[in-house]
Length: 166
Image 1 (cartoon, rainbow, N blue to C red):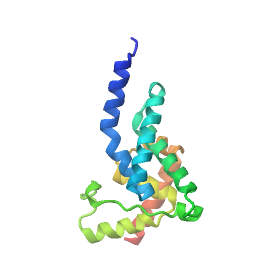
Image 2: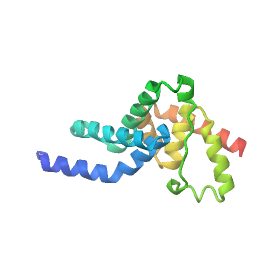
Image 3: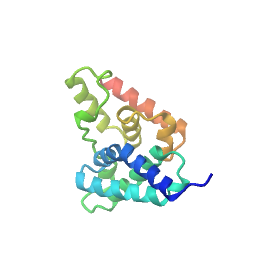
């Protein structure tokens, strides 16, 4: 069976419709700038279109590309030093959270956000993808370009810090 241009366009359109808002949200968390997040999101989907035939699982692939583009953007910005880039804080809009069953009240949730914001970059990214984007460890590993056991290690260390401070 051959894949037609129409099939590819449908696959692309379906993927964009399915993942656009979450990729934009992720970029906005990383960059803390909605306009820049829109640019990076658009570039991510252009790159996806260019690589459509070779992408097996679009969700982790999109996150990996978006993450790398965001980090490149942050490193290039003259106003941020490299250490500030590593220590950026996620401002997570409350309506994007599906953690209400995990975090009952607003005060608890705010404290958890603050603690996650202070985690090292790798732990912060893993916690964001696990808790806020509901990724599996396998998907996180693919998105961040690291071994699954390393992802689990970052997650459990971050989770332990979160629980210790809560």
